[in-house]
Length: 129
Image 1 (tube, one colour):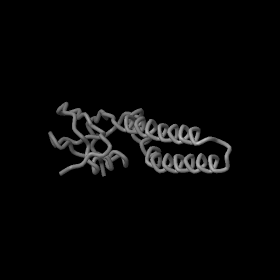
Image 2 (spheres, one colour):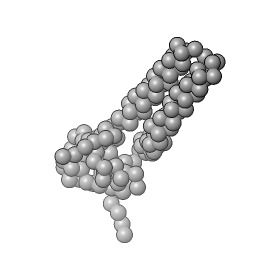
Image 3 (cartoon, rainbow, N blue to C red):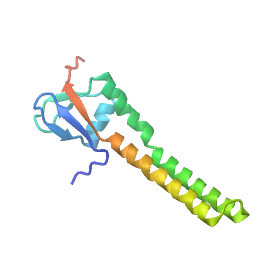
Image 4 (cartoon, rainbow, N blue to C red):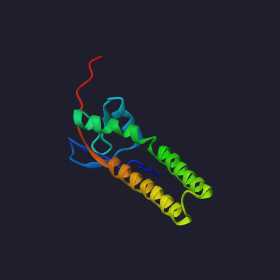
């Protein structure tokens, strides 16, 4: 059973199939190594600089969830303390908390949408060792 967590697809230049890339294929793309298409067994590689840049930008999304959780927890704690001290009412604390949670879910949704992409995989150049 394969589990695709990122939803990154690859479009083969040889057989014109669109395949869900496996983790080992994503690792090969990350280190700029050619790999074989699981459908036609031809060698593929990601060569487009724009797509390489977009693929590499996924690394910055890795810490997003943890950062968002810290932000929401801090916002909830600040709202609780402000309500406890008496600077805001209970309704304002609830509104503040709901806005923080709403921002968390919106940011995660946008990050997940950004993770779904289809990479155009070109024929790999022969390695000369």
